[in-house]
Image 1 (cartoon, rainbow, N blue to C red):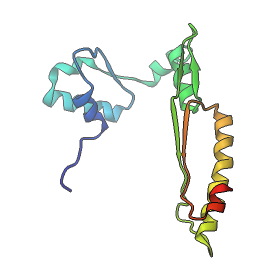
Image 2 (image 1 turned 60 degrees about the vertical axis):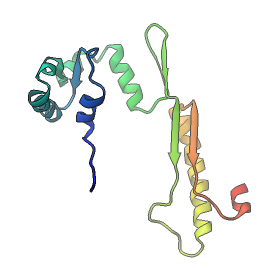
Image 3 (image 1 turned 120 degrees about the horizontal axis):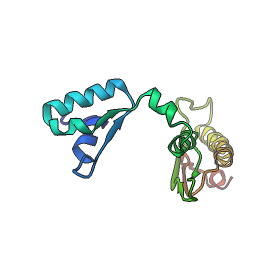
Image 4 (image 1 turned 45 degrees about the vertical axis):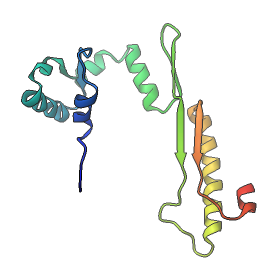
Length: 151
C-alpha cells in the first residue's frame, strides 16, 4: 500500500472542523473515546466541543422534530416535513444491478436479462414503497443483444 487515508472520524477533524463549529456530537462511546484521545494529542482546544450522545438524551428528544427527521431518513423515506412546513428531500437515488456470484447455468446473456428484469420490478416496488423521488439512476447490467436491451 502506497497511501492510506484516515478513517472517517479523523477525516471529519481534518476536513470539517473549523472555528465555526461549536459542537461535535458522537453517538458511540468507543468513537467518542477515540475522538478524545485524538484531540488530546493534537488539538486540545477541541476537547470542549466533544459531546457523547447517550440513550438518555435520545429518549428525552424522542418527541422532538430531530427524532422525527432521523427516523424518517433511517426508514429510507424520500421527504421529511418539519413543523414549520419546510422539507428535506433526497435528491439522488442510485441503484447498481449485478448478478453477484450467480452466473447462470447455460447462457450468460439470459442470466443478465433475467437479473435486469427482476431488478426493474423490485426497483419500481421500492420506489413506490419508500416514496422515492428526485433523480433516480439505475445502472443495469450491460446486455450484448439489442432484443434483450429492448425487452
